[in-house]
Length: 173
Image (cartoon, rainbow, N blue to C red; front, side):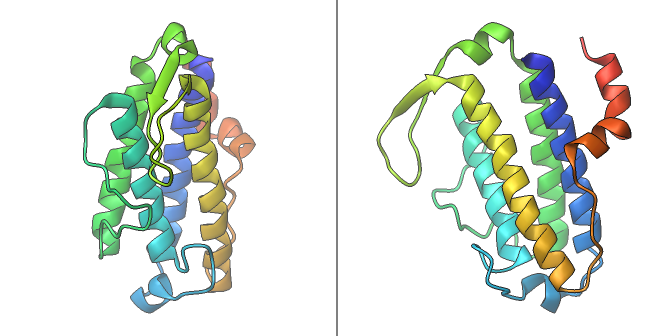
């Protein structure tokens, strides 16, 4: 499972980079335009993704800043948000690389933001959730981006595997 999560961490960073490169070409009004997505705009959805990752990484590692609300605006400016996204993606890669198979299978306890009652289950499903959550909201961002006249992106995992991920997979332990 560890190599599986390593692949997802590498894919996640690649997909975020691909998305941010495209969003970075929009003007600020388009970036902030509320188009009715769950968090409204690219600006709010991308901030939400960073919030969620910080919350999960704080749960996983016990370190780092974590907002107390899932709709916190961590960065008003796109450049600051993109820099923070790159740092969080790198932090997630390092964390995944630090894990063992035994840790992935072991119980993990945390308290959800939306229902402050402790929950315990193996770490693996929580890791899977983090990557699935990113994919879910990146899909929303892709829809917003194309609605704003931006490019249609290829963000599929298998495309990553066939391109940049190919070298990663061949080097997996």
